[in-house]
Amino acid sequence: MKAMLGTPQVEVALRWLATAVGALLLLMGIGFLVMPELLATVLLAAEPARAVGINSLRGDFGGLFLGMGLFVLIGTLTRHPRLLLVPIVFLALIVTGRLISLVVDDLPVVTKGAIAGELLFLAVLGLSLRASIARKANPAHPAVHAAAPPLRMAVVLGLVVIVVVVGAFQAQRQIGLRLLSAAALRSNGLASLPDGLHIGLAGTGAPLPEHRRHGVCTFVLAGKHLFIVDSGPGSTKALELMRLPLGDIQAVLLTHMHSDHIGGLGELMLKAWTRGARQQPLKVIGPEGVDKVVQGFNMAYAIDTDLRIAHHPPTIAAPEGAGAIAETIRSFDAEGAATIFQAPDLKVTAFLVDHRPAEPAVGFRFDYKGRSLVISGDTLPNETLRRQAQRADILLHEALQPEMLQIIHDAGLKAGQPNAAQLASDIMTYHTFPEEVARIARDADVRHVVLHHFLPQVPMRIFHSAFLGDARKIYRGPITMGAEGMLLSLPPESSDVRLGWLL
Image (cartoon, rainbow, N blue to C red; front, side, top):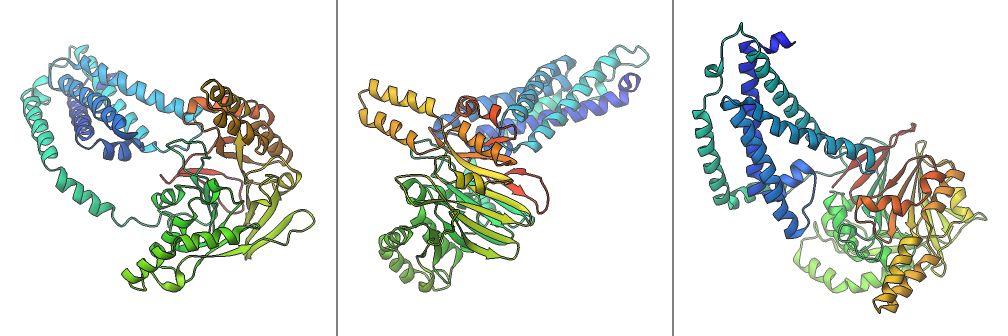
């Protein structure tokens, strides 16, 4: 291998490949300077946080990629190939960071392409440097620098870079219009999913504010049957961004009538009607009180409904498809369960939970082709939930961390905000602690736990360990901290749990 790398032909070929890598890195740097939000979305699967994030993308990532590209080109187009060590070190550190993330983060891998590309760049640059060093150490071969890309190419490339940057800034309008044209009609985000039980998290938040989380909302796709469980504030927008076919919703299932579980229902009713061209109202199923909630949203949106019927043709806003109709879950058996939907291979069960004084409150179990999902709703630990969770593939459970809320309580008192302190204290009395979730999962022999509806919010990965407390010591199975856009897929008649991403 070393002898082959020392041959002139191999060195020249690797130099050309390394030069191409340098040019690509340079173009990526230009992209971050001109279109930072687009590059962040496409290359990093990341959303910049307001103006500060955009500024960092332009400065940090633009500078990083431009710097790596320039060092690569100088190293390949001059007699100083050891300059390739600079981008090699940076790429190695970037890959190391990604690999660490694979081990310690609970989120699905959304940057497989980025890792593959960075490893490929690293291999090309490393081999090019090795070939150059091997050739210099082999006196049998003459210098081949003249056969490699000439230095004047660097000057020409530099001029091209300047022209591209200036031209891209000048053509931002045209670029934006073309990108909008390409993205305007995106396909159904669920169309490519295979048969199975799929769970998507559109909202994992709670009433306490956190800019990256929406009010609690989950979609469940069982074969061709699409359900929405709860509709918290802001969650309809997340469902649209996940490219969910809202017109195909079979029913919305509400666990209880707290505002953080119903606040987005009006918007969901509207979007399912107009975007889906529904010919019948959206069905909303829930415990006692659901009829009042649905009636209220129908009344609140009545004027808007009339205006849209007047403006759009019936193919868009059919009068008979507007609004929603309520269906109350009433007939629970002796064990607190009621079947609310049944079809070949699919059974949906509602069961009573303990969220007093919010009662009745329910959770839901979905069984489809040998796979099962249990959604706890808001609750204290209770025997009905433990019974329904028996051998479930996934238990999607809310969680409250008492030590963190105690800190918020104490901070509220010190800051002279007794109401905030009292709220933090009150909510501890009717939610489940992570360790309690772990005991339920252990006792019920659950395969995989996914937490959502975090109290308090956990905006960064560094808070996860503190939030979970001793939960991982109690339950030895996987515990995933849910996040917006997460997709969990359960193929029929198997034990696989596949993690994906829709945002």
